[in-house]
Length: 297
Image (cartoon, rainbow, N blue to C red):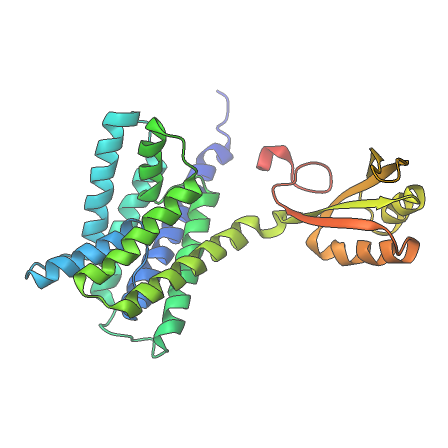
């Protein structure tokens, strides 16, 4: 009998554990930081907070986690009939953990701003925790539902980028807080929190994958390329080029390096050819020797 590879069992267990941790961080950021500070946000959690406030004025008290589950369940049901039922177990798992996590934190954490910090600082802390939780979930192939499901439905009929859907939906959800009497401060906090979440997710997801792509236009390209190879220990690619104004043919030195190595390359460019023309762009997801292997992408 062929022995069972432990990685086959341990890998999915690890993925679901990390997704659960991420969603508990996300839910704590909302219930422990954002909610006590009087903030709001986008996505299913933000819409749930707005709806719960609207219901409370009518004398109906409903936990935010329960409302998150109801919204996601409705979206999943609608999406199922429109785009099919291929959501994946991870999406359903994350939605359930978010809902249970929010209800759990709402039960065990004291009311009010128990952290004892300024409201704006609490919003920033909540945004960082929520963003870190989302990034951890995304890194394991999970999804937080909400806007992801809306994007699936919209893209069935019209191609719209995920970023635009996220921006438009968050703008509407956060602005709707004014309709339920949450005040302008909640709206301002909401936009701050959304920016912090987006920045945190980008930074964590980029991580060590974030690199620089450097193009150097110089007539002394051979010396430049050799200096980079010998000192920075990065591969160099020469690209044929021609200056349109001078009509002179030359080569562009292209190198992809880690962010921290960019300053070193700048130093060699200045030393070898102070008049060189150079552009530096940020890239992420660099695969190949010296970077990530394609199998781990």
